[in-house]
Image (tube, helix red, strand yellow):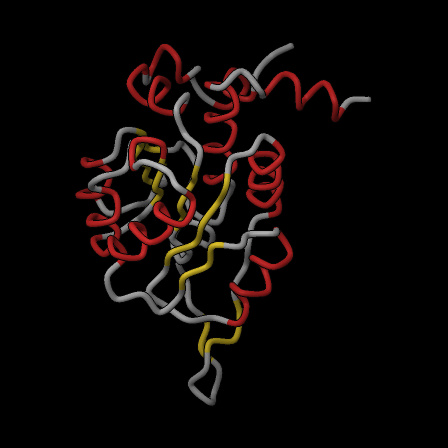
Amino acid sequence: MPSAFNTHTTNPSSSHPQAWERASQIKLLVLDVDGVLTNGQVWIDADGKESLKAFDIQDGLGIKLLEQCGISTAIITGRNSKMVLARCEELGIKQVHMGVGNKAIALDEVLKSLKLKSANCAVMGDDWPDLAIMKNAGLRIAPAQAHQAVQDFAHYVTSRTGGNSAVREVCDLILMAQNRYEELLNKAQL
């Protein structure tokens, strides 16, 4: 059975061995929202309120597949959004931290509540506010359009952009590194 990485990009076990090894230890995926789960555009209506966000459906399935394997997902973002809350509720994401000024403190709280070490945490961010939260993560990830400083800091840069299945690419990487991908794919084909 061909893997997703063979059809879209190079297999990360050979092209990104450090990321592959780190992904095999992940028990928590922490995501920023704008520029990671969305394309980073913010639509403001005439009343000055955020009116629209678009989320990628494949990202959502990837998050649900991680959950099936006992890998939690958390959202830590600097912005507040009812749309993000609704999407997190739909996906079953329980760790949702919005309007966060210091993302590193929020991550510490999440790790403590889940009784995890930072080495078991992957963080995906796209711009400077995410660098502090990425600093202690076991796996640092940037989407393809992330600011260059974030890409340079990351262990893995996705081939896809935020809001365009970049999160799914990371979910697949983690599932493959933990030898769960083929099992889940076979179940889906039944």
